[in-house]
Image (cartoon, rainbow, N blue to C red; front, side):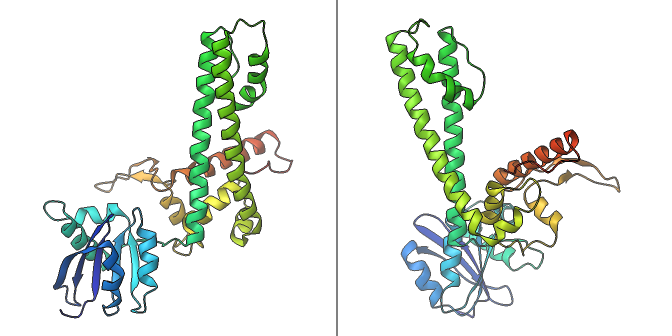
Length: 304
């Protein structure tokens, strides 16, 4: 085996594909490895530049390979940058070759490897977001079931939380025993979801209160604990961005461009990147703007 300079790693569940080239770009190997043999394989290689796609499990493998005594430099690449370099049919070998090709290019933009703490914070946000969606869906179902029984309640979780117990207990509203039974079950499920959302929000609030980066972010108008912790979990120190516009572009907040022949054509925002952070930033900006228009001489509103 020749001296390896650059390696592309295509990760999967059980079998991984690795493609290595020397400093002249000549293929050295393209082989399949079992999951348990990956770290041992890289531990026996000379110091190399290792590239892998930013997908499920990529942050873990990037951290583990970087910790090896071999001193590998590990870079993660967005899958949309790798796809154009896949030649002919898509296979694991072709993917590994394409990753190896892209990681060695000077113009490639890389994804920052997350720490374990960042992944934990990101998991809290994702679980909370799922619970919020389930709670919203549950309230919509309750409102629809009540409407079929001739009872209408206003939109919003607050109204459902306040009015539903009284509707179940009231004996003069015409609800059947069966209706009261399934509405009671739905209300119990609603309470459980409320508790779950509150639990994860409490974890996020504690982290935001004690983390220095989150404290600095919360000094920005419209940025509160949820937004600050989501940003820190996604980008860390943000040193990988050249400026603020590069950060905005990574979140899909900058306009798409379709220019040709010297004519510039800008469209709506690209909506790439993390949709959760994008929604939080847009919502925070709307609140600050609306409050500033209504009461320009007062203090800024509470943050999210």
